[in-house]
Image (cartoon, rainbow, N blue to C red; front, side, top):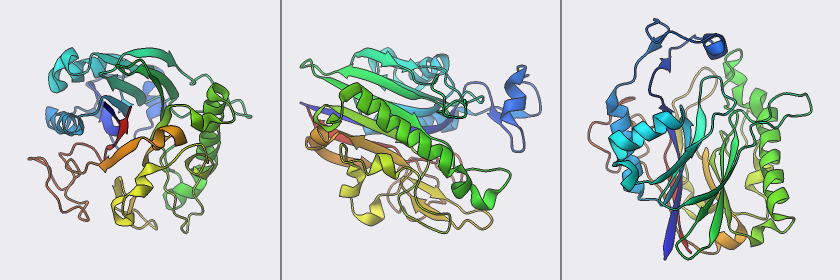
Length: 314
């Protein structure tokens, strides 16, 4: 049999609000918030419907999600848009470190038999290490094999105080997070970790090309010899998962921000690698294939990220 494993940044899967521009999220949530405040605006159902279409089309057995408000929101989304527990009977989200409630989560057709959070980890300066979390999830295949999924959403490249140098300024934080993920995997599986069935995946918020902003901050993880960036099996022009429309001194560009990194032993069993772009906004003009009905220039859309899925001969 085969198992399909995917990652998808669903872009603010919130039930209550979306932060407007120029709102400090830390200050906004420190003492609670008023959903009627003019600082927030409600989401409509259209984007969620498109997000659900993308997930359904993936037809993945396990989907790692980023930017989910919480378990309650995820259950509601499953019930109203995905077909309920029959579609994905197993799901989990753990509140992480982001004050905006941008968490990582998992929905699965396969039983979740183990879960561990690393949001408590601190760096050398005593700060929370992960911007959100590294969520460790074991799922069990029908033949009894356990595959471990490490769900990540690393530090954004956005720097509001210096938007022209966001990638450079945020790189040190992302670099220490990527190294920490590698250590977590090594602590679990040992120095020959690649011999075991696991996948590191998620929105790593950086690309592997060097530019005026410097070198990639995630190379210690993505180029680790115990795993494979299987998106590299695709033609070079087809590896992008996100379109940035450009801002200030930063030009527009198509980059891979979303990764599925199976261990070397599991990568040897990967039969397919797919990036699904039917939910991308029209401004991502490099993509000329079919889109879901209702997609707009910027919105509505399924997400600003493309989901990535692998099919493993399990």
